Structures are given as structure tokens and as C-alpha cells.
Length: 258
Ligand code: COA
Image (cartoon, rainbow, N blue to C red):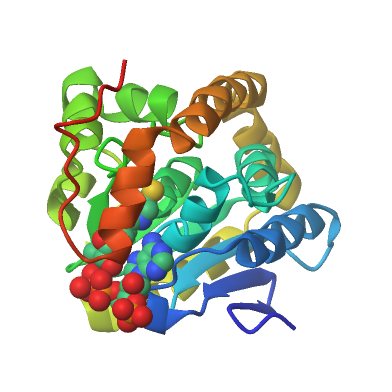
């Protein structure tokens, strides 16, 4: 079993735990692979009626591993990154998905929440979408889903500045269902998961399918991926990744990004 993503299947709930706390659960290609497979097999597993995603440590996830982004920018990433499979599966699964989020949820850590059906935040949760700060563009169909969910003005601001959105604000603008004290996050998520698992599964999944336009999401992700891949190889992005590894602020002022 992959040690950085733990899977547990109990009482109809598939719990997926991101478990790389020393790196704030930053997601590697291998971790995306486990996530993608787990969500895929949940759809045909009669023992699974709901998926719960959570993270170990003080952060939900720091998003994509920036070392791997830098390798991809240098042309040495995997030919078919697992992230695309993960995003496709989480966007299209008919199994209800719950997320339990503490601390920072960065990049895909936030955008994956837009594909979840029930989101519980702890009081210290902060949603951060630093794509522009990294000279990238939003992914996971978030360029479509976030404005739809919270309005263009707030979505633009979140993307453009990448500043943390506190839990209470995320709740108020409809990204989350509830905010609970940190100590209660796991138990509350489990309670909600078991409540959903007890509902009639056929009806629940049919409702979910009616609520989501999977084709639209897939086409938006395709469009985003084309731009994202180009941006990833840009001089601006290389500067952003260099700055992260050198623990300094990036300097985009001398790069002509046109
Ligand atoms: N990829 C790879 N490693 C990461 C990472 C990421 N996305 N985020 C954090 N880490 C690593 C750090 O390099 C550090 O490793 P080290 O102990 O070997 O130096 C470790 O995780 C702890 O991170 P640190 O920055 O010291 O923790 P913090 O609590 O001060 O800050 C974050 C946490 C998440 C705010 C900060 O790490 C961060 O901004 N990370 C980058 C997030 C990002 O831009 N993700 C991509 C989104 S598209």
C-alpha cells in the first residue's frame, strides 16, 4: 500500500487520507495515481457508498508538489501525469464525495473541493489558489466552477491575488457546508459520511449525476490543460519555481510574458 495516501473502507465509507504531513501533504504524481485509482474503483465497489477525503497533519494539502512542477517545466515529467486522471475521476464519479479540510488547502487542495458534494472546514482552514502567483492558470475546471459558485468578482480576486480565504468566508460564499472546531473535524466528517451512506444509494447517485454537467467539466479541463501546460514551460513559471526552492520572492519584473 502507498504510504502517502491511506485508504480505509469501513461501513460504506471509503476514507482517503493524504499522508505526507512533513511536506504539508503536497501531492506527487504517485499520490495522484492512488487517488485516481481509489475513486475509480469506488464507483464499482458495492461496499462503498460515499468517499471521504481528508489530510493528516496541520494542512489539508499544499497542492501539487512544486518540485514535480519544476521537473515538468524542465521537460522531465511523466508523459501522462496521473493528475489528469484524478481530476477526471473526481469530476465524473457518481459516488458522493465529502472533504474534511484543516489548515491550508492550496491549489488543487481548493479546486478539488468544487468537485466535492459536501465540504467541512475546520475553523483554521484557509483556501488558497496561487496559480497566478506561480505564473500558471487555474485547473480542475475551477476557471468555470469557482466564478459559478462565488461570482466572478470574488473568483477573480482569489485567483489573481492568491490570498487565503478564511473558513468563515468560504462558508458564507457557498464553497463549504459547515465550519467546525479543529478537534471535531474528523468526527463530524465521519458522522456526515455515515448519514449519506445510509441514504438510498441509487437515488443519491442519480441525483448527483443530474446535478453535474460532466461533459462541460471535461471540456473545461481540456481547455485549461492546454494553457496550463504551455504556462508551465514559461520563463515566468520557471522563475516562480526557482524562487520557491530558493525560499525567496519571485521577480517577474524583467520577464516579458507576452
Ligand atoms: N511542493 C513541495 N514541497 C512543499 C510544498 C509543495 N507544494 N508545500 C510545502 N512543501 C514543503 C516545503 O518545501 C517544506 O519542506 P522542507 O521542510 O524540506 O523545507 C515543508 O513542505 C513544509 O513547508 P513550509 O513552507 O515550511 O510550511 P509553512 O507552514 O511555512 O507553509 C505552505 C505552508 C503550504 C503555505 C507553504 O509551504 C507553501 O506556500 N507551499 C507551496 C504551495 C503551492 O504553491 N502549491 C502549488 C499550488 S498550484
